[in-house]
Image (cartoon, helix red, strand yellow):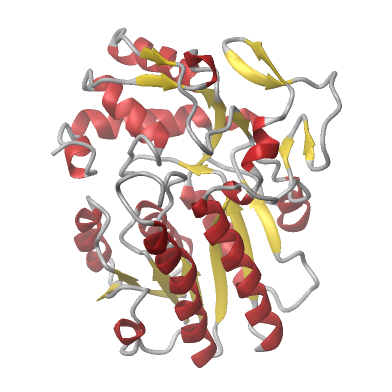
Length: 358
Protein backbone atom coordinates (compact mmCIF):
# COMPACT_ATOMS: atom_id res chain seq x y z
CA UNK A 1 0.00 0.00 0.00
CA UNK A 2 1.39 3.41 -1.04
CA UNK A 3 0.46 6.13 1.43
CA UNK A 4 -0.02 9.53 -0.22
CA UNK A 5 -0.57 12.83 1.58
CA UNK A 6 -2.01 15.72 -0.47
CA UNK A 7 -1.77 19.29 0.78
CA UNK A 8 -4.64 21.51 -0.32
CA UNK A 9 -6.69 18.36 -0.81
CA UNK A 10 -10.05 20.14 -0.68
CA UNK A 11 -9.18 22.48 -3.52
CA UNK A 12 -10.00 21.67 -7.13
CA UNK A 13 -6.57 20.29 -8.04
CA UNK A 14 -6.04 18.43 -4.78
CA UNK A 15 -9.47 16.80 -4.68
CA UNK A 16 -9.35 15.87 -8.38
CA UNK A 17 -5.97 14.19 -7.94
CA UNK A 18 -7.14 12.41 -4.78
CA UNK A 19 -10.14 10.93 -6.60
CA UNK A 20 -7.95 10.16 -9.60
CA UNK A 21 -5.44 8.22 -7.51
CA UNK A 22 -8.20 6.17 -5.92
CA UNK A 23 -9.63 5.46 -9.37
CA UNK A 24 -6.17 4.57 -10.67
CA UNK A 25 -5.30 1.87 -8.15
CA UNK A 26 -6.58 0.26 -4.98
CA UNK A 27 -2.94 0.28 -3.80
CA UNK A 28 -3.18 3.97 -2.84
CA UNK A 29 -4.10 5.08 0.66
CA UNK A 30 -4.85 8.79 0.42
CA UNK A 31 -4.94 11.38 3.19
CA UNK A 32 -4.84 15.14 3.03
CA UNK A 33 -4.47 18.42 4.86
CA UNK A 34 -6.41 21.61 4.14
CA UNK A 35 -7.28 24.77 6.07
CA UNK A 36 -10.56 25.12 4.09
CA UNK A 37 -9.88 28.82 3.57
CA UNK A 38 -10.71 28.72 -0.13
CA UNK A 39 -14.40 29.61 -0.63
CA UNK A 40 -16.26 26.49 -1.72
CA UNK A 41 -13.66 23.99 -0.53
CA UNK A 42 -16.01 22.64 2.13
CA UNK A 43 -18.12 20.93 -0.55
CA UNK A 44 -15.25 18.52 -1.26
CA UNK A 45 -14.95 17.27 2.32
CA UNK A 46 -17.72 14.65 2.39
CA UNK A 47 -17.06 13.16 -1.08
CA UNK A 48 -13.45 12.57 -0.02
CA UNK A 49 -14.39 11.11 3.36
CA UNK A 50 -16.92 8.83 1.67
CA UNK A 51 -14.04 7.28 -0.27
CA UNK A 52 -12.04 6.65 2.88
CA UNK A 53 -9.72 9.67 2.64
CA UNK A 54 -8.52 10.82 6.05
CA UNK A 55 -8.61 14.60 6.30
CA UNK A 56 -6.56 16.79 8.63
CA UNK A 57 -7.74 20.34 9.20
CA UNK A 58 -4.53 22.32 9.19
CA UNK A 59 -2.63 25.20 7.66
CA UNK A 60 0.65 24.46 5.87
CA UNK A 61 2.01 27.73 7.24
CA UNK A 62 1.76 26.34 10.79
CA UNK A 63 4.32 23.71 11.76
CA UNK A 64 2.24 22.68 14.77
CA UNK A 65 -0.74 21.93 12.48
CA UNK A 66 1.38 19.33 10.68
CA UNK A 67 2.80 17.59 13.76
CA UNK A 68 0.00 15.03 14.13
CA UNK A 69 0.05 13.85 10.52
CA UNK A 70 1.17 10.19 10.46
CA UNK A 71 3.78 8.60 8.23
CA UNK A 72 3.34 8.61 4.45
CA UNK A 73 5.36 7.58 1.41
CA UNK A 74 4.68 10.49 -0.95
CA UNK A 75 3.53 14.08 -0.52
CA UNK A 76 1.77 15.92 -3.34
CA UNK A 77 1.94 19.67 -2.68
CA UNK A 78 -1.21 21.19 -4.17
CA UNK A 79 -1.62 23.94 -1.55
CA UNK A 80 -1.13 27.44 -2.91
CA UNK A 81 -2.62 30.84 -3.50
CA UNK A 82 -2.77 30.40 -7.29
CA UNK A 83 -3.72 33.91 -8.39
CA UNK A 84 -1.29 35.85 -10.56
CA UNK A 85 -2.63 38.98 -8.83
CA UNK A 86 -2.02 37.57 -5.34
CA UNK A 87 -0.32 40.13 -3.14
CA UNK A 88 -1.18 42.89 -5.60
CA UNK A 89 -4.97 42.98 -5.37
CA UNK A 90 -6.93 43.58 -2.17
CA UNK A 91 -7.59 39.87 -1.52
CA UNK A 92 -4.18 39.06 -0.03
CA UNK A 93 -0.92 40.68 1.04
CA UNK A 94 2.49 40.01 -0.40
CA UNK A 95 3.56 38.44 2.91
CA UNK A 96 0.59 36.04 2.81
CA UNK A 97 1.54 34.90 -0.70
CA UNK A 98 5.03 33.88 0.38
CA UNK A 99 3.89 32.46 3.72
CA UNK A 100 1.57 30.06 1.88
CA UNK A 101 3.38 29.33 -1.36
CA UNK A 102 6.99 29.32 -0.15
CA UNK A 103 7.14 28.89 3.62
CA UNK A 104 4.27 26.39 3.44
CA UNK A 105 6.24 24.35 0.90
CA UNK A 106 9.30 24.43 3.16
CA UNK A 107 7.20 23.14 6.07
CA UNK A 108 5.91 20.32 3.86
CA UNK A 109 9.43 19.50 2.69
CA UNK A 110 10.50 19.21 6.32
CA UNK A 111 7.56 16.90 6.95
CA UNK A 112 8.50 14.74 3.96
CA UNK A 113 12.12 14.68 5.16
CA UNK A 114 10.93 13.48 8.59
CA UNK A 115 9.37 10.39 7.01
CA UNK A 116 11.95 10.00 4.21
CA UNK A 117 9.08 10.43 1.75
CA UNK A 118 9.05 11.55 -1.86
CA UNK A 119 7.83 15.01 -2.84
CA UNK A 120 5.76 16.03 -5.87
CA UNK A 121 5.33 19.79 -6.30
CA UNK A 122 2.52 21.13 -8.45
CA UNK A 123 4.05 24.29 -9.87
CA UNK A 124 2.87 26.68 -12.56
CA UNK A 125 3.54 28.08 -16.01
CA UNK A 126 3.66 31.49 -14.34
CA UNK A 127 7.26 30.87 -13.27
CA UNK A 128 8.10 32.02 -16.80
CA UNK A 129 8.95 35.68 -17.34
CA UNK A 130 5.88 37.88 -17.74
CA UNK A 131 8.00 40.51 -19.51
CA UNK A 132 9.38 38.01 -22.02
CA UNK A 133 5.93 36.53 -22.63
CA UNK A 134 4.43 39.97 -23.19
CA UNK A 135 7.18 40.74 -25.71
CA UNK A 136 6.59 37.72 -27.92
CA UNK A 137 5.68 38.63 -31.52
CA UNK A 138 1.94 38.20 -31.98
CA UNK A 139 -0.59 38.44 -34.77
CA UNK A 140 -4.37 38.16 -34.68
CA UNK A 141 -5.70 35.12 -36.48
CA UNK A 142 -9.18 33.59 -36.19
CA UNK A 143 -10.06 35.99 -33.35
CA UNK A 144 -7.05 34.89 -31.31
CA UNK A 145 -3.48 35.95 -30.70
CA UNK A 146 -1.10 33.61 -32.49
CA UNK A 147 2.65 33.43 -32.35
CA UNK A 148 4.19 35.19 -35.36
CA UNK A 149 6.53 32.50 -36.60
CA UNK A 150 8.01 34.79 -39.24
CA UNK A 151 9.69 36.88 -36.51
CA UNK A 152 12.73 35.98 -34.43
CA UNK A 153 11.73 33.99 -31.36
CA UNK A 154 13.60 33.80 -28.04
CA UNK A 155 15.00 30.57 -26.69
CA UNK A 156 12.38 28.22 -25.30
CA UNK A 157 9.42 29.08 -27.50
CA UNK A 158 8.27 27.38 -30.69
CA UNK A 159 5.03 26.82 -32.56
CA UNK A 160 4.27 24.10 -29.98
CA UNK A 161 4.45 26.59 -27.12
CA UNK A 162 6.72 27.55 -24.24
CA UNK A 163 9.12 24.85 -23.07
CA UNK A 164 11.29 24.47 -19.97
CA UNK A 165 14.15 26.49 -21.51
CA UNK A 166 12.12 29.72 -21.63
CA UNK A 167 13.29 32.63 -19.48
CA UNK A 168 12.25 32.80 -15.82
CA UNK A 169 13.70 36.27 -15.26
CA UNK A 170 11.71 38.85 -13.31
CA UNK A 171 9.08 40.10 -13.39
CA UNK A 172 6.99 36.98 -13.14
CA UNK A 173 4.43 38.02 -10.45
CA UNK A 174 4.66 37.41 -6.73
CA UNK A 175 2.80 34.15 -7.29
CA UNK A 176 5.22 33.03 -9.98
CA UNK A 177 8.23 34.06 -7.92
CA UNK A 178 7.00 32.17 -4.87
CA UNK A 179 6.54 29.01 -6.94
CA UNK A 180 9.92 29.35 -8.66
CA UNK A 181 11.61 29.74 -5.28
CA UNK A 182 9.71 26.67 -4.06
CA UNK A 183 10.96 24.68 -7.05
CA UNK A 184 14.59 25.59 -6.32
CA UNK A 185 14.32 24.76 -2.64
CA UNK A 186 12.48 21.48 -3.29
CA UNK A 187 15.21 20.33 -5.67
CA UNK A 188 17.87 21.25 -3.09
CA UNK A 189 16.07 19.19 -0.45
CA UNK A 190 16.01 16.32 -2.90
CA UNK A 191 19.76 16.46 -3.43
CA UNK A 192 20.87 17.17 0.14
CA UNK A 193 18.52 14.76 1.91
CA UNK A 194 18.30 12.14 -0.86
CA UNK A 195 14.56 12.58 -1.31
CA UNK A 196 12.90 11.86 -4.67
CA UNK A 197 11.53 15.21 -5.83
CA UNK A 198 9.56 16.04 -8.98
CA UNK A 199 8.55 19.51 -10.18
CA UNK A 200 5.47 19.56 -12.40
CA UNK A 201 4.79 22.94 -14.01
CA UNK A 202 1.10 23.02 -14.89
CA UNK A 203 -0.79 25.22 -17.31
CA UNK A 204 -4.28 26.52 -16.55
CA UNK A 205 -6.18 23.81 -14.70
CA UNK A 206 -9.86 23.54 -15.58
CA UNK A 207 -12.85 21.30 -15.09
CA UNK A 208 -16.25 20.84 -13.52
CA UNK A 209 -16.37 21.75 -9.85
CA UNK A 210 -13.55 24.29 -10.01
CA UNK A 211 -14.01 27.37 -7.85
CA UNK A 212 -13.42 29.83 -10.68
CA UNK A 213 -12.71 33.51 -10.18
CA UNK A 214 -11.69 36.28 -12.62
CA UNK A 215 -8.03 35.94 -11.54
CA UNK A 216 -7.85 32.13 -11.37
CA UNK A 217 -9.83 29.28 -12.87
CA UNK A 218 -10.79 31.51 -15.78
CA UNK A 219 -12.50 28.82 -17.88
CA UNK A 220 -14.84 27.82 -15.06
CA UNK A 221 -15.51 31.41 -14.02
CA UNK A 222 -16.24 32.57 -17.56
CA UNK A 223 -18.70 29.78 -18.33
CA UNK A 224 -20.54 30.17 -15.03
CA UNK A 225 -20.68 33.95 -15.34
CA UNK A 226 -21.78 33.86 -18.99
CA UNK A 227 -24.56 31.38 -18.19
CA UNK A 228 -25.79 33.56 -15.30
CA UNK A 229 -25.58 36.76 -17.38
CA UNK A 230 -23.07 38.35 -15.03
CA UNK A 231 -20.88 41.29 -16.04
CA UNK A 232 -17.82 40.20 -18.03
CA UNK A 233 -14.95 42.20 -19.53
CA UNK A 234 -12.11 41.63 -21.94
CA UNK A 235 -9.29 43.35 -20.06
CA UNK A 236 -6.16 44.69 -21.72
CA UNK A 237 -4.43 44.01 -25.03
CA UNK A 238 -6.85 46.30 -26.85
CA UNK A 239 -9.91 44.88 -25.11
CA UNK A 240 -10.67 42.47 -27.94
CA UNK A 241 -10.53 39.22 -25.96
CA UNK A 242 -7.79 37.80 -28.17
CA UNK A 243 -5.59 36.57 -25.30
CA UNK A 244 -5.02 32.80 -25.40
CA UNK A 245 -4.37 30.12 -22.76
CA UNK A 246 -4.39 26.34 -22.85
CA UNK A 247 -6.16 24.25 -20.24
CA UNK A 248 -5.61 20.89 -18.54
CA UNK A 249 -7.82 18.75 -16.33
CA UNK A 250 -5.88 17.89 -13.14
CA UNK A 251 -6.97 14.23 -13.31
CA UNK A 252 -4.80 13.96 -16.43
CA UNK A 253 -1.78 14.37 -14.13
CA UNK A 254 -2.56 11.20 -12.18
CA UNK A 255 -0.91 8.67 -14.54
CA UNK A 256 2.36 10.61 -14.59
CA UNK A 257 2.31 11.21 -10.83
CA UNK A 258 1.95 7.45 -10.43
CA UNK A 259 4.91 6.86 -12.77
CA UNK A 260 7.02 9.37 -10.86
CA UNK A 261 6.28 7.54 -7.60
CA UNK A 262 7.44 4.28 -9.18
CA UNK A 263 10.62 5.75 -10.68
CA UNK A 264 13.81 4.33 -9.21
CA UNK A 265 16.31 7.02 -10.10
CA UNK A 266 16.47 6.44 -13.84
CA UNK A 267 17.93 9.87 -14.54
CA UNK A 268 14.70 11.39 -15.81
CA UNK A 269 14.49 15.21 -15.79
CA UNK A 270 13.09 16.47 -12.52
CA UNK A 271 11.29 19.55 -13.87
CA UNK A 272 8.69 19.30 -16.64
CA UNK A 273 5.80 21.18 -18.23
CA UNK A 274 2.31 19.71 -18.20
CA UNK A 275 -0.27 21.64 -20.21
CA UNK A 276 -3.07 21.25 -22.68
CA UNK A 277 -1.02 22.49 -25.62
CA UNK A 278 -2.30 24.01 -28.84
CA UNK A 279 -5.15 21.51 -29.18
CA UNK A 280 -6.56 22.53 -25.79
CA UNK A 281 -6.12 26.28 -26.21
CA UNK A 282 -8.70 29.01 -26.73
CA UNK A 283 -9.00 32.80 -26.63
CA UNK A 284 -11.44 34.57 -24.34
CA UNK A 285 -13.33 35.71 -27.42
CA UNK A 286 -13.46 32.12 -28.62
CA UNK A 287 -14.71 31.03 -25.21
CA UNK A 288 -17.46 33.65 -25.39
CA UNK A 289 -18.51 32.37 -28.80
CA UNK A 290 -18.65 28.84 -27.41
CA UNK A 291 -20.81 30.07 -24.52
CA UNK A 292 -23.10 31.96 -26.91
CA UNK A 293 -23.77 28.76 -28.83
CA UNK A 294 -24.61 26.94 -25.60
CA UNK A 295 -26.56 29.57 -23.66
CA UNK A 296 -27.49 32.35 -26.09
CA UNK A 297 -25.58 35.56 -26.63
CA UNK A 298 -24.53 37.74 -23.72
CA UNK A 299 -22.70 41.08 -23.94
CA UNK A 300 -19.05 41.19 -22.89
CA UNK A 301 -17.65 44.69 -22.45
CA UNK A 302 -14.24 45.89 -23.54
CA UNK A 303 -11.68 47.34 -21.13
CA UNK A 304 -8.39 48.38 -22.74
CA UNK A 305 -6.63 48.91 -19.40
CA UNK A 306 -3.58 46.67 -19.15
CA UNK A 307 -3.01 44.91 -15.84
CA UNK A 308 0.32 43.91 -14.38
CA UNK A 309 1.44 40.36 -15.12
CA UNK A 310 -1.25 39.66 -17.73
CA UNK A 311 0.14 38.05 -20.88
CA UNK A 312 -1.40 37.87 -24.36
CA UNK A 313 -0.53 34.25 -25.08
CA UNK A 314 0.74 31.33 -23.03
CA UNK A 315 0.60 27.76 -24.28
CA UNK A 316 2.77 25.15 -22.62
CA UNK A 317 4.91 22.81 -24.70
CA UNK A 318 4.80 19.44 -22.92
CA UNK A 319 7.11 17.71 -25.38
CA UNK A 320 9.64 16.79 -22.69
CA UNK A 321 6.91 15.10 -20.63
CA UNK A 322 5.77 13.19 -23.71
CA UNK A 323 9.31 12.01 -24.46
CA UNK A 324 10.07 11.18 -20.83
CA UNK A 325 6.80 9.67 -19.63
CA UNK A 326 4.81 9.08 -22.85
CA UNK A 327 2.39 11.63 -21.41
CA UNK A 328 -0.24 13.60 -23.27
CA UNK A 329 -3.38 15.31 -21.93
CA UNK A 330 -6.26 12.83 -22.11
CA UNK A 331 -9.22 15.20 -21.69
CA UNK A 332 -9.91 17.31 -24.77
CA UNK A 333 -10.89 20.98 -24.59
CA UNK A 334 -14.47 20.39 -25.75
CA UNK A 335 -14.97 17.74 -23.04
CA UNK A 336 -13.62 20.09 -20.35
CA UNK A 337 -15.93 22.91 -21.47
CA UNK A 338 -18.93 20.56 -21.65
CA UNK A 339 -18.24 19.26 -18.15
CA UNK A 340 -18.01 22.80 -16.75
CA UNK A 341 -21.21 23.84 -18.53
CA UNK A 342 -23.20 20.86 -17.26
CA UNK A 343 -21.95 21.47 -13.73
CA UNK A 344 -22.76 25.19 -13.99
CA UNK A 345 -26.29 24.42 -15.16
CA UNK A 346 -26.81 22.06 -12.21
CA UNK A 347 -25.32 24.45 -9.62
CA UNK A 348 -26.80 27.95 -10.00
CA UNK A 349 -25.18 28.97 -6.69
CA UNK A 350 -21.64 28.14 -7.82
CA UNK A 351 -20.31 31.67 -8.32
CA UNK A 352 -21.48 32.65 -4.84
CA UNK A 353 -20.06 29.45 -3.39
CA UNK A 354 -16.75 30.19 -5.09
CA UNK A 355 -16.59 33.56 -3.36
CA UNK A 356 -17.10 35.67 -6.47
CA UNK A 357 -20.33 37.23 -5.23
CA UNK A 358 -21.65 37.66 -1.70
